[in-house]
Image (cartoon, rainbow, N blue to C red):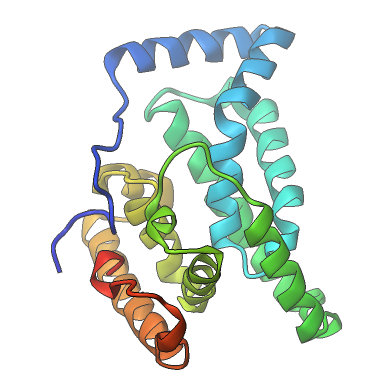
Length: 224
């Protein structure tokens, strides 16, 4: 499989020196507790962080709570941000860690209390309501049914591989950025992405068999 983002027919915008300079200025304003700076941070990162966390959660209905905790940690810890990475990378690292911590907590304390039917309904309701201002691999799907199928397949990928897969294939981040976010080596990042792709392919194949008659010509190779 080629080392490209799944189904992207366009160039993913990259951060530029001007972006970094704007980020440093924003961080300085946040440290000075400027209210407008907090609003700007939310306006810029709320949707990307929501989308990232949503795709990492086993229970999508918990996404809003996790996102709220992410930004609380950003606000509380901005004074310790040492500019060794981009602001986006730092925030994404917090988001990935919060999603992982919440999954672990949920798995220990709450999963046995959640009915499978209720969880399924919540998941599909969130998938239908979630909107993204920019194209992503799920936008090439023929309809909402296909999008739900892809989201369900992604949820079947083990969390250990899912984060790297989402950051690479959906967020379009570089290996270096992913290594910083996950705090692992480049070799580990490549391994996680490769195994995540294989797991996603297997999950899609398993789900496509009963759904093949409903896909209306959708080509799997566009997503794998």
